[in-house]
Image (cartoon, rainbow, N blue to C red; front, top):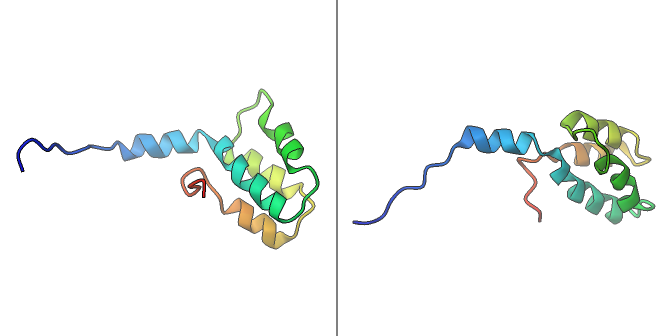
Length: 88
């Protein structure tokens, strides 16, 4: 098939960009908190995401650990990463 070119992906760069953007999982965490009828999930996450500190996997885990939800729900939220979250 003439004229077709291949798209080359820099998978290492994509993985690094995702690892550097843990804030994207906040939407998924908020959705789970809403499902669990957690009080004011948006406001809780706003405190995490609206700081001058970089959001990392560690800061997300600390945030989750401080939530008043079951260990099962905490485990569900901790399983979400920038690389696995699809927005659905």
